[in-house]
Amino acid sequence: MNVPILAPFAYGASGRWLTSSQAHEVFICDGNEDHTVHVIALDGTVAGLRNTDGLVLALDDGGMLYGLDPGTGQRAWVVPVGSGARMLDATETGRWAVVHDGGVSWGEGPQQRGHLSIPEARFARFDPSGQVLAVVDAEGSFRTDALAGSPGPAQALGFAPTGLAHSRLGWWLVSTTRGIFRVPVSGGEPELYLKWGGGSPPEAVACSHNGRLCAFITEGNVVALFGVERDANLGAIVYADRKVGELEFGPQAWLGVGIGLGDGNKIDLLHAHACHRTDPPPDRPRNRWMLQLGYDPAEIAPVFGPPDAAPAPSADPRTQWGANEGTPATGDAPPSAGMHLYAVGLLGIAAFLAYTAVSDWYDDSFMAWLGVGILGVSGLSILLSGLRK
Image (cartoon, rainbow, N blue to C red):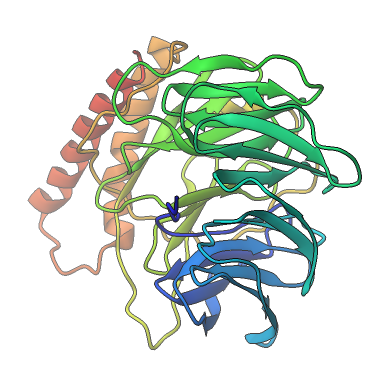
C-alpha cells in the first residue's frame, strides 16, 4: 500500500527552515526571511521531508533517504531505506523513521539502527524523546515500540488511519476516516474524542509543540483548528484554489502549511492575520494563491496557554486572500455567535484591504476593490456558518 503525501512539507520547533517540495525538487526556505535559499533535486519524487538541528532530511519514492545541508545546498549523504517508501518522520536531533513496503526502518544519520516488520504500516511518529515510536497500519491497528525494549500490544481503532501525531499532554492523536482518536501514552484505551459527522474525513493531523492545539486537513483545501484537551472548535483556514499537502507546527503557535509547487505559508495563530508566504528563487515563477483566516486569536490563546519562549521570528507579511468556495465540516463545540459577527466584519474588511496590498495594481477601479471586499465577507460568512455545526 503506497499512498504518498500530496505535497511533503516541513517546519519544526526551531523555525529555522520552511521546506517544501515540487515533484523531485526540495525547496529550502529561510524560516526568518521567508525566501528560498536552495533548490535541491532528488533522484525520485519527494515522499517525505523533515527539518532537524543540522540537516534537512528528504525521502524519495525510490526508497532513498537524503541528508541535505541547508547551508551549502549539497547532499551530505544518501542511503537506501526500502522500496515503496511513503512516509518520513524525524526528531530535532536527527533520529529518523521511514515507512516502506517492508515495514518501518529507523536510524540516525546515514546509519540504520533498527527495523520493525509491519508490512502494512501506514504512519510512524516519534515521541519528543525519540525513544518511543508509534505505528499505525492500514487497518487501524495502533502500537508503540520502545526502541530500547520490547514492542507494546496492538490496539484496534477500527478505522483506516489518515494521520498520526504526538501531544505532550499525554496522548497520541490518530486521524481516521471516522474522526480523531486520542490514545493515552500510558497505554490506556483509545478514545474517539473528535467524532466526524460527514464530508471529507480529517487527514494529516498535526499537533503544536506544547501539545495543546491540533490541526488537520479536510475537503482537501481546509485546515481545521481544534483544542486537544477538549474538542474546542477554533476555526479554519481555507485555500480557495490550492490543495493542502502537509501540516507541521513551528515555534509557539506558528503553523506551517505546505501546498505543493514549492509553496507554503506560516501562520501565527495567536496574532490576527500574521500570515507569511514562501518566496521562490528569482529564476522561478512566483505563484499566487488565495486563502482565508477564519479563526479568532482571542479564542485560541486560552486553549494554547501562555507563551513558553520568546516571540517567533518576524518577517515581511505577504498575504494573499480570497473567497471560500466550500463549507468545512466540523465538530460539536462552536465558537460564540459574538465572535462570528466580529470575525465576519473584521476579516471582511481585512480581505478588502489586503487586496490592495498584494495586488499588482493592474486594476485600480473602486468596483474591483469593492467586489473583493463583498466576496470576502460572503465567503467568510459561509465558512463561519459551517463552523456552527
